[in-house]
Image (cartoon, rainbow, N blue to C red; front, top):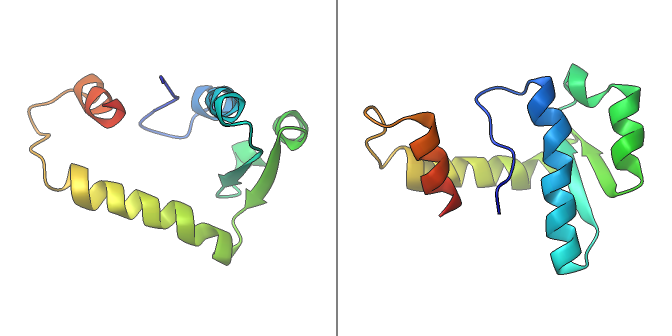
Length: 99
């Protein structure tokens, strides 16, 4: 699966990532939780209305933060910090992440 990955939470990333989740939900036949950090892009009314019908939207509540933050920390600890990424491109990192 080719999901949206970026170096910063710009408009492109924020607006393409629900599509990846929709593909995943279709394969698993489950409704998903879409978690955001309540940044400006995630509070835009157009974006909220777009995802509200498809996801249970979780916005920056401390108990909800635990799972995504834990995953992010685990990913960094087991993959990023243990590898030598200085000579790699962002594309190579994304390929390793998707494999």
